[in-house]
Amino acid sequence: MKKTTTKKNNVFISHNKKDSEIAREIALFLAAEDISVWFDEWIISAGDSIIEGINSGLSGCTHFIIIWSKNAAKSNWVKKELESVLAKAIKEKSPRIVPIKIDETNLPPLLLNVKYIKYNDGSESDREYIVETISGSKPSQNFIKAVVKKYNELIYEYHSEDPLPFKACPQCGSNNLYRYSTTDYQQDRAYYYIKCKKCGWIEWTQ
Image (cartoon, rainbow, N blue to C red; front, top):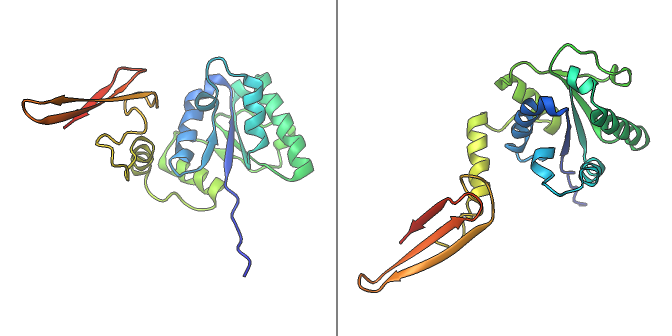
């Protein structure tokens, strides 16, 4: 029997910077469920090409979330991202466009026949609806548990024999970690340290 594979969902979140707080919340809803998310704050770092980053995210996305508001309606960036995706969707029937309205601003004419999500206050019902729209199934657990689970997966290397199995700094998220050890020969004890070069966080164990 031929094995079938399910295409992984990759979500691009288009938004105006004035709506970043809500965009970030929606990105977390999805990321906590192991859905790949392109969110500019997470992807584009200082010195990176904004245009190259956006083009890369758009080219590989299966779902295009557009956070629509009075701010988005005035944004040239949001307009250009939408135009690019609409052209691709018409030609290739992908990505799926998911408008999320955060105020009463009317959707642009080309999206009037697309069912939108009305975002209320970031409630659990908002999260469930957004996750189910993207993944086809309800969230596996409540948001707090999902975030804690995802946090632990990203921070710790559970099967490592390292006495301090951190993959990233639990304080700032950086993976720029420095490991070292010292030995107290009088007490015959070894001490292991790990330090984050970015924020200065430090942890140790014997």
